[in-house]
Length: 495
Ligand SMILES: *[C@@H]1O[C@H](CO)[C@@H](O)[C@H](O)[C@H]1NC(C)=O
Ligand SMILES: *[C@@H]1O[C@H](CO)[C@@H](O)[C@H](O)[C@H]1NC(C)=O
Ligand SMILES: *[C@@H]1O[C@H](CO)[C@@H](O)[C@H](O)[C@H]1NC(C)=O
Ligand SMILES: *[C@@H]1O[C@H](CO)[C@@H](O)[C@H](O)[C@H]1NC(C)=O
Ligand SMILES: *[C@@H]1O[C@H](CO)[C@@H](O)[C@H](O)[C@H]1NC(C)=O
Image (tube, rainbow, N blue to C red; front, side, top):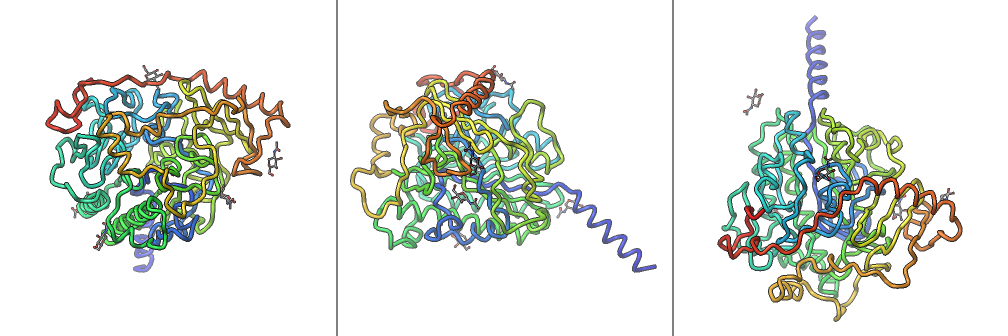
């Protein structure tokens, strides 16, 4: 009798834990190249990430957008950026652009089903008005910065500080490398969270975006690398890895691991001129090539995944995280979002629920790309990095250093992310190129001439998708934005 009661209690407890929505930790690395993680390249020292990846599911066809703002738009809204107006470039600090409020963001949706929601790191979805900032878009707390490409120690972008704790300016972290203060904050959230409530933690690390900066002990881990950019960049990857390791430890110590989903993804590819590498893939950040859009990614959970320890090659798109997380959490995306829940695929290894996706549609750059099954059609220029860039092995003098970029910013105000603004088409590029990504994942063989009917088929599909385009929201320089009007801090209130 007693044993029956005990097993009933155990069953009941199992049922209770199984039906409880899991904690979700969503880790986004900035500008991390395909070849810049240990599970793709043994020269990279990322033991903590490798462990999670190898014990979880490594995603080998997980696509993101070519740039930071668009990828974050897709993660947070579930919409293709071209349907929100944020398909072109990144939001520059002085631009009154933002992810419009008619898109309900992931943290708000998760809050509605009972989650506590916290964000640490890079926002990059607009801040010209408080209404567009994280704690007004569903996050209970925010600790990080609004823009991109700031200094890792001074936390300034150009001449303005950009660091907030909710709405308060953080001005006591001068000289502290961001990966350390972000880890401290993550641990604090984890330690003070009651695990009976589901937690959503969005960890949008600053690493490994330019400027190239890292504490010396991380750079020293790669003393064998002669190229200065690559050496510092590799150190940054290891700093990111240590941060994830410390946060994972805290999750274990505080009892989160029984019911948690951890997702790791890059936001776009690496930049060869800033130490990143995407081999064997073609192209880089800012391009429509696979090197810009295929993200290093994995999922990990000690309890929720039925099949682990393998490489999943099924098709996944950045917008799918929105629908997947909501599915796992017991929520519902509204009708019309582009994201599809891939929870079955991630959990069991079953086929992807999608057979096509849009890489991007940018009516200003006049380029676009679409994937349909094995095939990828690129319309217009894929961007300005067209090659297969080798891992830098020695100092390349004409490669700009991060310091140089930073000086440029100070002098001109317009240097920031300038490498993203330039998207110069090479004059001899064909208008349409077709690749078989299954047979040719590295995009060496344009087969457009061999299969004109397939080109037409994919072009027709693209025409349909383009009907949903929201014109690029790309306002010009707004003088009212400047930190000189706000005590030297980038501050909302000018739109
Ligand atoms: C959001 O608003 C923009 C601008 O008004 C509009 O173009 C777009 O279609 C709207 N999207 C949704 C999903 O409501
Ligand atoms: C956590 O929340 C549960 C359910 O609300 C409650 O019973 C428990 O006392 C809380 N634990 C702590 C340490 O506050
Ligand atoms: C990780 O934890 C160790 C041990 O407490 C600490 O020395 C190190 O600075 C931490 N690193 C980061 C990135 O938080
Ligand atoms: C693309 O490659 C796959 C795998 O090799 C092959 O099955 C398929 O027939 C190819 N498609 C075309 C149009 O060549
Ligand atoms: C994963 O993707 C890489 C790069 O496209 C490719 O070389 C590799 O064969 C893929 N692995 C599997 C198991 O498909």
